[in-house]
Length: 156
Image (cartoon, rainbow, N blue to C red):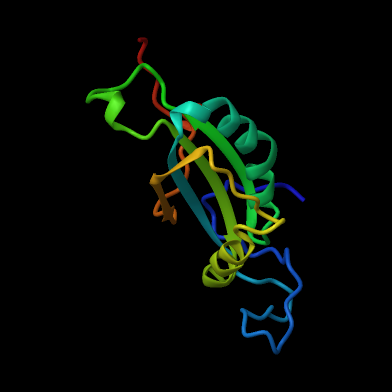
């Protein structure tokens, strides 16, 4: 099946839905509307344990999070030295971007929280727990790709 851009509202059945679980039910064709969200998780590491933090995040945490039903991808980023303006030292040093497709975001978040601190999502002391923020976003427009823009691109 061809993948559509992530910003489109999904109507493919990707999960088993039963009539008694309180979640959205498939229509007569077996489709369920799935909401697409992006979770941005900003954080700092403990400066004394930065290598441990990055090892834990790259080898364990992203995989643990995307193992939660509804999470479909995860990717980490580090703050670049090149910025548009402002002082980069005031921003969060690390960012994890997770894509979520679910018919019940509250249940997805509840499941993520339930797994936190367990063998399913193991914690680390290498994160600076006082400097963490997570925000959820839903698309309000279509994704626009440079290759699809009809006007000529200006040279840099």
